[in-house]
Length: 308
Length: 287
Image (cartoon, rainbow over all chains, first blue to last red; front, side, top):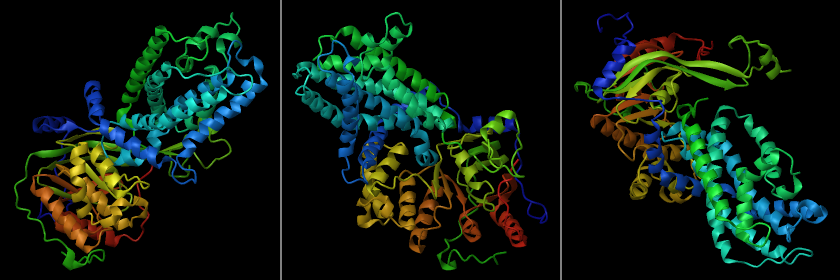
């Protein structure tokens, strides 16, 4: 090759079959292909401390750059709840017939929906907003939506405490039933954990869609607002939706409505919303099922994340 | 032969030429007829783009005749080669010729549009814009980078002082990355990527911002990796560095492999080509 000065040197080119045989002989693995599900789950599990560190760092840097800093994490849902309490708690008296403390009912509904809403929204954006990370390191991509939902869950802990305080305060508002803390409040973190698992499933589902078509981010706020109403965050579905409507059983048993009911039952201040084992079972089943579906759906496109 | 003057690096700072009489090891990377096509959103629909004028396209791009919803850019078109252990391969090509895309595909970060890539281990890609979270401190970035590489928490913690020392950060370790100079950031990136000696290391222009002393240090580290029977891919516009650090070179133009062989032969050809070229508008060829 060296003596043919004018010729362009080009190493012998192998055919596809030869390349494959050579790779197999040398024990090489193919790149850019989706790993089998079992190995993928194992890889994600091995990166659990990566998920944790990534989400903790994100949680920390989230509210930097404003004067009130981390306080906004709590102020935002409080203001959100205040708007709905004024409208649905005081102006529309009939939004929740049979409920002694409409303000607490609405507060629990809107605060709880916050966890679902922020998880899905940040899950949707998780792949585009972590593109740099995805393009420079190779790791199971499910880490990205899982870490973002973990961030929202970590940030929900102070929100949950704020929710308890606000619910106690609603007890002294005029026309609202008194609120007394009970032992069942200790179950609230477990209810939040189930909701977080469920939200992670939904977030992974939307993460794949958001990675492929960024347009969905524009439509998502409207879908989530619709979801807020369809889950009865500020009114009682069982009383407000007419009995004959075919949609009613769906509205009552759709997962987000179940989680709102679970939180309200755990607060234990409304005789109309009792806590039953069936409610917990239903909540757990939704969490496990939706998480599995979301994970599978996300994994199916594993090799495409990071491509323009 | 070596008359090409390189203004980027002072001649005395060039590393000694690597030994090239070592026998080659087993194959470490096999690339088979690789094609990579990018999707670009909202790109100009000029003479370069694929013309599509279905009713749907017209509706989507309503009122903006010069933008199409999606343009396809073929960045790598049918590249094949085999790399071996102990080989150090320079990749030459003008701007936009598909060098970085090729490396990212071999690293498994970009899925091939068609064709296949086989490797003996997870390659470690060191690029100019590697992931760094600018609002977090250098220490935190080391932690996250190390975990992304697949190391355990304990392992990364043990390595933080070493990485910080190699990157010469000093007290900047505890400041957010946004306060770093570009040289500091690139030193940190290099240090993180080489925490664990990778079997296959790819360097994409990543050392260009370092100063002379760091360049020396990083060259030594790269040489160590190659000595441990690793494979090193090296993208640089500095022909002198490529000649010094590599044993073999690939020349890619518009996504097609033009030449593949001994570094001096390929570098001479490439040098002649670049010198003879007056028009700098190359770039990937659009369909």
